[in-house]
Image (cartoon, rainbow, N blue to C red):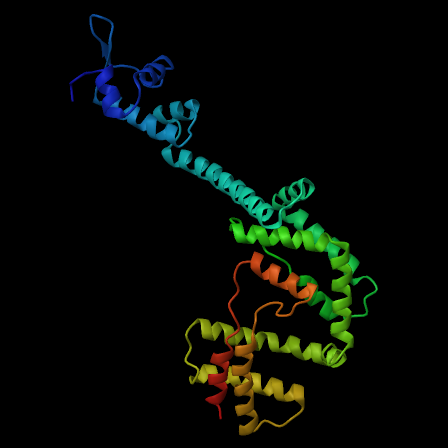
Length: 317
């Protein structure tokens, strides 16, 4: 513990250069313990330990003032780690954003104007993203003869970009932002939403009674999702109760009696729905693409447990 080391030996032991050790001494960060008759600096074990800590902190991009505060006991390592973790996470976010822009450029062979726009889109704040979507829906929905409740459901389908998005999520956001600003796309979405409500089974499915009935099914569906996620056996009393609520709701909607045949058919339809479920969107229209991108940007949501509910319904027969 009492041994003193020459500056060359200190450099070999700490991995610092001789010039760096002299610099830290001149800056008053780690002073030598003594000097010999020739004026050469000598360091003790404590000095070596402090220099090794300085090297580690510098590798973490700590500034000289921060290092001084730590060595003087005025700032803890925890404080330093917290500060630098925040800096690193911000740097990672910027890098992910740039990587998303570059990948999109390569995939689309973008022009200089498009690159500028993509860079802006990738760096938008949550409020800016919301304003962009508000403008989109304001134009798409103005004068559109669609039930307000259904329109509210569609408008609520918004991307929720996580604090640390992946490159794929950023790429999806760039595409979505470009999509909602395109005038032709806005016109096509408006036309598709109109067709959804006015053609085929659209008038019936968008009628107030049907929309109210779908809204009533939400808590039942959520109960099924929670039970399936928690591993509740489909033949348990809890599962059968959820299945009964679902079958009763559906029978009321269709205005038909509940009997064993209806229960079996409902279970079979659940299995078919699982096979046909393509996730959000599912079609090839512009609004379908909108929903797909929203789902790709947001945190993954659990899939509806069609097969679990089918088994629970069969257990009630």
